[in-house]
Length: 223
Image (cartoon, rainbow, N blue to C red; front, side, top):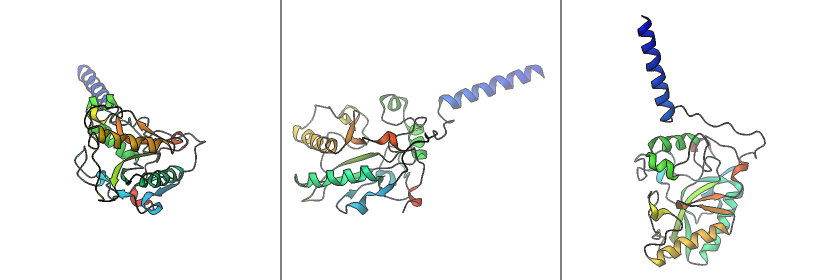
């Protein structure tokens, strides 16, 4: 009986360590008490010329299944207002913003972490749910450009969620004109307080992201 108890204890410890190492024990991080009150606004309601391609509401994403029940995009009010200004500036060059993702509930970030490869986690293609992401705070947006004349998405150095060196914002390969469109997007976004992520030309964080709480509100609950 004593040997049985010892064996059960070892087995339980092994299972617990396995769960911890494989990130099944994460819970939503606690927020600090002095953060701004969130004000998530729907982007399309601020500017109807935004085009939406919410890939996580479809099967056309790296997890291969919809993780949103609604194809909508939200940001905190200051970030959303800044994005409207970016869209206006880009129209002078004949382009508009194609929104792929904005605010993302924390539970979706957890799902992405569990679905990613270890390499993808180490490189930073997915956010660590133990820390939460800037998407969870409503201060990060994934986007590209579309041509105002044709309404079609432009070609970029990589496709969205293509996890390789072509996705890096400093990638120097491929067509120079394509890189020029990527750089136009980056420069215009950064002129309004956004900063591009090193490993993803499409991902931009708003300057005040740390002032907002990590949220896990479903799109269906947002007006």
